[in-house]
Amino acid sequence: MWSGDELDLDAYLARIGIGRGGTRGGEERDLRPDLATLYAVHRAHIAAIPFESLDVTLGRPVALEVKSLQDKLVHRRRGGYCYEQNSLLAAALQRIGFEVSGRGARNRSRGDTLLPVTHAVLVVTVAGEPWLCDAGFGHPGPFEPVPLARPGVEVRQGDSTYAVHREEGDVLVLRRSCEGIRQDLYAFTPQPYHPVDYVVLNHYSSSHPRSAFLGKVIVQRPGEDVRVALLGRELTRWYPDGRVEREIVAPEELIALLDHEFGLRLSERDEADLVRIFRAED
Image 1 (cartoon, rainbow, N blue to C red):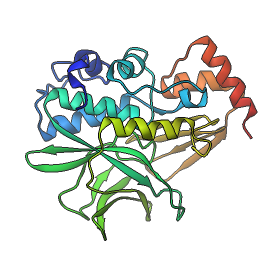
Image 2 (image 1 turned 30 degrees about the horizontal axis):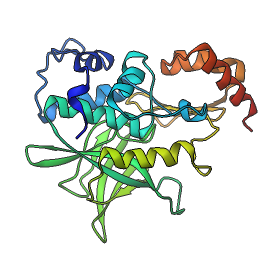
Image 3 (image 1 turned 120 degrees about the vertical axis):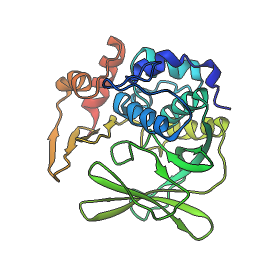
């Protein structure tokens, strides 16, 4: 389903810093479809590939075919947003031998406003137990799998705890707790989503006038040590000890910041267009 057979697995693993032999940080790990591998690949993917929607900002098409994702996120070392991130992760996990299914989620992180289903997540089954996997929710999202078989069970990840809660009508809600504050991140149902469904959601998010991604620079990196997000002109860093740092980024600082903070490099044309858009932001 996820076209894992079209993925250059060696190149993907090198991109996320694991390698075919499962080596990361001097540790040897066989890439079998087990829980240890799922954790290792999920963490490494999020650490290496930032969340970004710069192609949407630039008015460029966002392709979800595996070859296109591989060219952009692996070979050109770009990032992507949820459809790109989780489609690539799904292809890699399927290639390794995991059972992977998609879901469509409704963002709840913006308060009580009812938003459409536009977020893509994955459910990966290991030894008969389902796990929520999501490499594409940005800085508040989990960087490790979250158990689905035991609703309400909390797992600690860095400065936050995550748990999936069950609501009426088989609705599942991912909830994050940090510094004593609980927040629903998104809700989803057991209905499977297929890659073609993500094509439709991607079209809305990349082109609809009400999409939150249009005309705005959004780049984020979740992490165990520090979470970083550039939303518009504001760069924010959240530290595990509760400290929060905010600064306003000047247009002439943007390209260098994307490079040293997020590891992103664009073509000269895209850099010039992005700075022009950045200057026009309020």
